[in-house]
Structures are given as structure tokens and as C-alpha cells.
Length: 145
Image 1 (cartoon, rainbow, N blue to C red):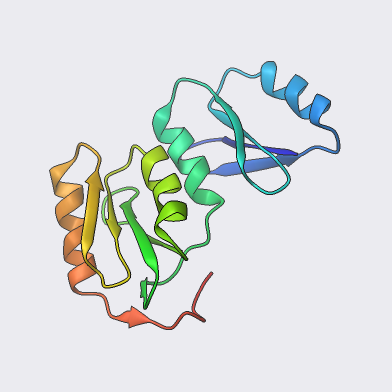
Image 2: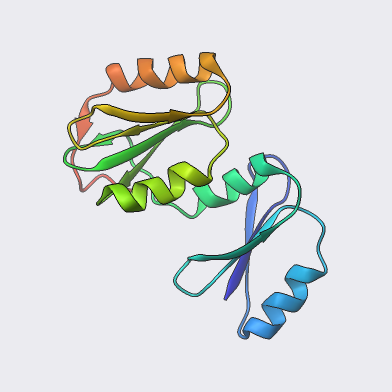
């Protein structure tokens, strides 16, 4: 079991625990934004009142790519002005788990690079994401971070 927190803007820290009881105890004593993950990095529960920090924690555990990966579902976000991030997924269900839990501006692309859904409240961010997608070449599936 482990827990992720955001300690300062975009600085996500993960704390591993050997026992679920210790993780639960530590989780319950904190006030800041936090997510309790199981050993498979699946969310168990969240706490704190900062949805942007929770989104940062969620994104930090995801594998990123340098751009759009051919044949993959993509969640594309803007996390700070001009900081466009690409998250590849093998199927729509996995992509939607992240997409639906974020508050950042974001776009969900199908494997054919077609926009399936958008989210967030900042039209300028959506413009920036769409512009980056339009001007980004497809990258090899071997270029994952």
C-alpha cells in the first residue's frame, strides 16, 4: 500500500507502507490532498479539499509519452500554461478512468486521433491542447517515459 500527496505545486510525493493499517492510520491523520493506492496503484480512497492537487497526484502515477502514440487511446492535458501532457492507454475504459477523475482541462482521443470527449473549465487550455495535438507527430510506442 502507498499514498501520494502533493507537497508544493506539482511536487508529488509517494509514501510506501508495509501494512494497510499503517497506511490508513497515516492517511486519516492528514489534512492535505492525498490518495491512498493499493499495491497495484489502484485508488482506494481520497482526502483533502484540493481537486487540482488530487489531479496532479493521479497524473504523476501515470505513464507519459512524448506525444500521440499510434493505436492508443490518449488523454491529453494542460497542467500549467503550455505544459501539455500525453497519457497513452491500451483501451478506452482505462483512459476514461483517468479522464473522468481529472479537473484539469483535458481531451480524450481515440486511436484514430479523433476527439471523443473534453473536460475542464478553461477554453484557452482546450485551445492549447487541440493546437498541440494538431501539430504533434505520432510517436513510436517504444517512446514511453
